[in-house]
Length: 71
Image (cartoon, rainbow, N blue to C red; front, side):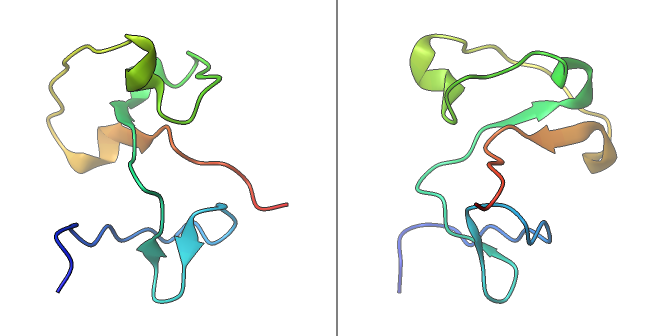
C-alpha cells in the first residue's frame, strides 16, 4: 500500500490525470478561487516561496493550481 493519499480528479485533459480519475502528480498545489487570476509559472508554486494560508468555506471555492493541459 502506498504512503501517498489518493487524489481524485475528473479533469481528464490534465497532464496528471490518470485512469479511474486519479491524480498522478507527485505533489499538488490547491488554492482558493479568488487567487485564480494569479498565474503560477511553476506547477509547484509553494517551492518558490509563495506559501500562504487561506480558509475556504466549501470545496466549491477551491481550485487546483497543478493543472497542466495534456499535449
